[in-house]
Image 1: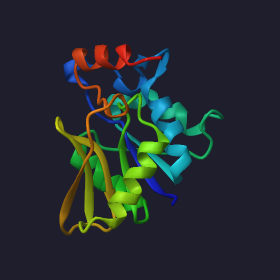
Image 2: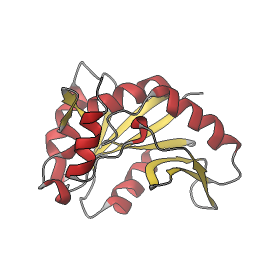
Image 3: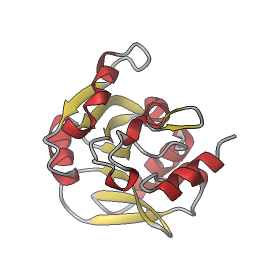
Image 4: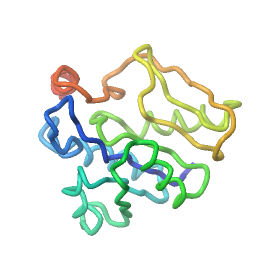
Length: 173
């Protein structure tokens, strides 16, 4: 199943010193590159939602490395505002992904899509014992929310803090 996808990449990365987090390298390459490659297998369309805080991502919109990636510069007012703007451009169902999960694989995404489509909620979140991961399927806008739980794994490491970054690096092959 191929769906529209939104890669959320507009955060301020305040816990990481204000760096352009999606461009932080893990395993020798920017995290967002790894997410875009995984997304490319399950997505028919990819919208990269960045903000004034992460404008350094804009060149990815015309990159030959990721052809067809569309970009949307959000207001930078926050995740919810940027997500709302990106959702307005995408069809449904739409898979929302964070740009800071460097070990995310297309296999995990494909498995989640199958489970999420079968789940009763209109918006289905991928969660672990650590909480929501930022991966969600919007089958329609609004409506009931549902969680699908996965065991923690390197594929689901979400880099928000220096410790998360260390953990992601330790998981490199």
